[in-house]
Amino acid sequence: MKALTWQGKHEISVKNVNIPRILNPHDAVIKVTTAAICGSDLHLYDGYIPTMEKGDIMGHETMGEVVEIGPKVKSIKVGDRIVIPFDIACGSCHHCTEEEFSLCDNTNPNAIMADKAYGHSGAGLFGFSHMFGGYAGGQAEYIRVPFVDTNSLVIPAGIPDEKVLFLSDIFPTGFMAAENCNIKPGDTVAIWGAGPVAQMAIRSAYLLGAERVIAIDHYEGRLKMAKEGGAETINFDDADSVLDELNFLTGGRGPDSCIDAVGMEAHGHTVTASMDRVKAAVGLATDRPDALRQAIQACKKGGTVSIPGVYGGFLDKVPFGAAFGKGLTFKMGQTHVQKYMQPLLDLIIGEQIDPSFVITHRLSIDDGPMAYKNFNDKKDEYIKVIMKMH
Amino acid sequence: MATRTTHETKKPTKKPIKAHSALQSRTQAKREKDEERDKARQSVTIKKTPAQVFAFWRNFENLPFFMKDLKEVTEISKKVSHWVVELKNGAKVEWDAEIIAEREDQMISWKSIGDSEVTQTGTVWFTEAPSNLGTVVQLAMNYSVPGGKVTELITKLSGEDPETLILTNLRRLKAYLETGEIPTTEGQPSGRDEDSHTVKH
Image (cartoon, rainbow over all chains, first blue to last red; front, side, top):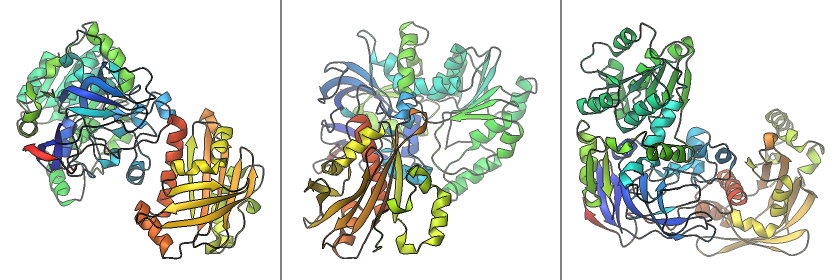
């Protein structure tokens, strides 16, 4: 079968590889119909995530049709059309029963690596480095899904892939980011980044009762999409100071909650952002947290900083004194996608939201290498790429 | 190799977990000579009752299910079992182990007996975890690594140091008892497949 494989920094190739098979009794094999490229795939593309191996199959935003099931699969049947969450959960451990699916105890066969790096390991992830299990991803014609009864949402007939594909990651991720803000009526939410997760977070924040959402980015194409979702926008290339601007817009109080939807590869122009690039390049720091720094500085006293943006390692010059001095709450982590898929599908069916608004490019699997390059290099134009896999 | 016979002798019988608190192990460390300390101590919490975990472990023939270094364990008698580890080059290391102490649903202690390159003692405790989290499994082991076959066993077979291997094995036990399978990616496709080839850059 064809699969998009990681060959090294800035190199994705379409390879012909073996078709996956059932390896464990709760597995299923899925014929992939549509897959998307995620902003976090770009962290792999840019070589920011350690423990990738040449040949790894990419992708964690995937859906398709069940073609084979293992002997212990209970609820999923051959022929079911399913969306697959990016985090792999066993469904049985303590964290899964608490609906903390991305913290599953059991699905990462390489947990020992994450234990050493982080103290304890989270769940295995599709297409996301060997420290998180090294599971073959879904930018391929077929994918093996472990514990498929837990790691699936069956889609009713008649709904196109485009409307539901993002239940695999960015819609739940944006929604959980907004939910983590603990939004109260009248609240202002500021969001750093206007990428696909931020677009979902803007709309989720309004669904959860926010009065105002302010999006901060420097790509006009993305800011335009944020405006269409009802957000006020700040282009940080034009603003003298994002912090002054936010204070002005919020009567000097600062936003009630701040979402860092950028993560480890922030593009800021501040002095610290430039130093981050140098330090990351020479290995003195691993992540570039300029969006996070601003979010902490901007946030209202007693407010919440919600972090859906991915971080992997060590952060330099994080204003922890500001966080402490203002009594901030931090909420973060990989999304518990399984918890959100069904209620968010209900919102889609109820026509309260159609997440396909974010799609800018519809391509095929053979376009994959070009799509990665353009998604990385032309962020203004390429906001969300989906690919037909069959 | 330490000649200590059993962990049981050092432990208070009522609350076995407390004997393993960090404080106590530090004071023990001061008292004991180096070679008398446990070489490896690891712990996991499993969402099953102590009776369920004990019953699974007490049947030593189940051990190869989750101990990835173990090829086979055969029960010779109620107390004695025969353990076989196969090296990557096909050579085998074998020894007999005898249960030297056990309390139903609480602990099992064993040691290797007879003439073998491998000498090991191990004790596993099963204690009810707080908040209905299941069972705390604590494993303490001593073993000899005299070089030769056994060193080869540890480095070649697992690529892991013994302590890491023990934790990995306990995690595999947890996954098996909680989910009914041990998660793996062995056998999945990748661009490293022998017959894979590039379609497009």
